[in-house]
Image (cartoon, rainbow, N blue to C red; front, side):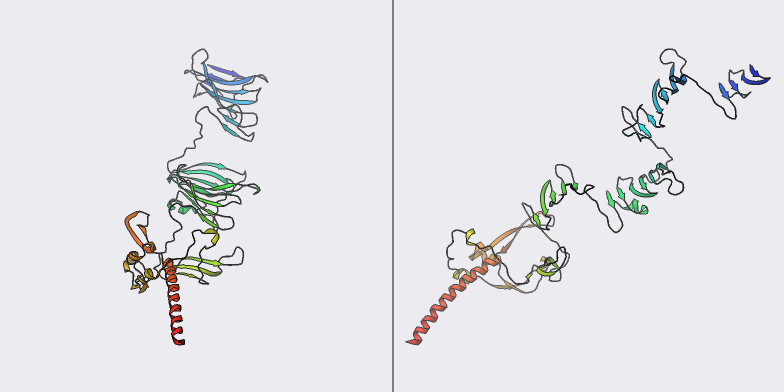
Length: 420
């Protein structure tokens, strides 16, 4: 069947029922062929123009899919299963699963569903899947920001200004500011590299109000953390209990029910390496200065003035009486020469002192025991005896006073005999 005007064929229905407009060999049920092929749908200024797709049935489901232009809202609608799925509104915004834009009128794409919502970017198993952010120019700066997933190496990269800034690898490790060639070998859950200086800052934009910032490690029940509130101390905690506080003036306070501060040196015992050293410096904020106190790795203690004090104010004491005689106790002390065994790790030179077990026989109050533990704090089931040497010195001073009194008595007797 042919249809024509001005002796020219314009439309044909072939033996298969295909309709051709502008072609004598229609390949589809409707085939339009022209240098500028168009189908126009015209409706009223407040009506709709639609391209409907039916299933051949009747009733409400006859047209389950459609492409429709709504003149009243000036929007293009796309539907499946008789339900609108997507529209392009009058401002050119693309709305999927919703008829209104997102939280901002500047959202050019809004995706909304009543269940899970997602956007999938699919590529080959060895290729990139990317979302690019362009500044409208061309060349290397055309896609200044991007999200890219590398299917070959299974990592997600985030870039700004055309340069990769962050990567999440296949193990979930995060690297920020690291050279891309080294990303796959860094092996940390989080690694930062910011050139010569790398910081993590916890503050506000104006620095005018107090802000609390810090790190939390572990779960809520047994967390370790480092936190600070502006102009307040830095607090260090384990097991959700504050263990140490660093005041704004630099003072350090420790809170422990078992142990204090321990230092460990890889150097051998001696006076070449120190375990602790104190300085004094009148320059505010300066490090170093005059050495005033040192504890060496062999246990030797030095200070600049050889002054070691004891709190001794009378207002703090009670039950004050004269010390009893220390003559017999001190006379019984056996001073010995010895050296430490090499396997103890202490220096092995000959020393002068006492043996705890021997001193304990006459002055048990001067001897105490400590529990032996390994480097991990495990009890080894043994103890080590130690001596309160400062108290032993005080007993010696009392004995010396007794000796002085006896000497003075003898001197008086000698003087009396000489004068008789």
